[in-house]
Image 1: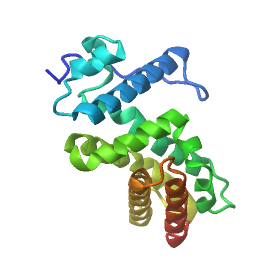
Image 2 (image 1 turned 135 degrees about the vertical axis):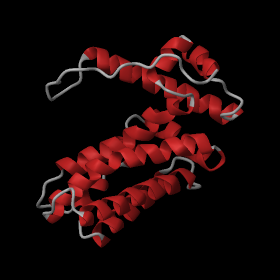
Image 3 (image 1 turned 120 degrees about the vertical axis):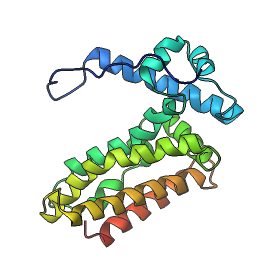
Length: 213
């Protein structure tokens, strides 16, 4: 059965800013490791033919642990899908207000995604999306969850309230540009993704300039 019987409760309390506690870092590392295993199995066998228990077994964890971390087998890939977008949103939020946001995306794409192996796995995962609706749904949810942060970034840039319609619309457009550019990067023909990464940066930077950011 691919649906969990137990869900992990969200940590309570208020955390101080800075580096997450060691236990949270360990959990994040475990989630990312499971994501890598899930991508490999999904690419080899397809999502339908890969039960959650197989992912757990290959990752060296119990099914109970897997379901504590993820509500479904498709959600196992979320750490890879979310990492790059979260890093980009964080970079945009912290970018100096006297410099255009388009400059914030000019760094190497793999440094935004994380380790080189994460970038390789993400590219492989994004290539699965057209044929795997369950994974595609997770990808769309990841972008939907990023919209409030992007809206705050845009609102701060144009001097508007995050609840206003204009920053929300601009944030949706920016979000879509990030999603489409990532998919194009994944689908680029060059073996190491370098040309696709350059196209990614140019496309997103261009979209930011068009949005007046």
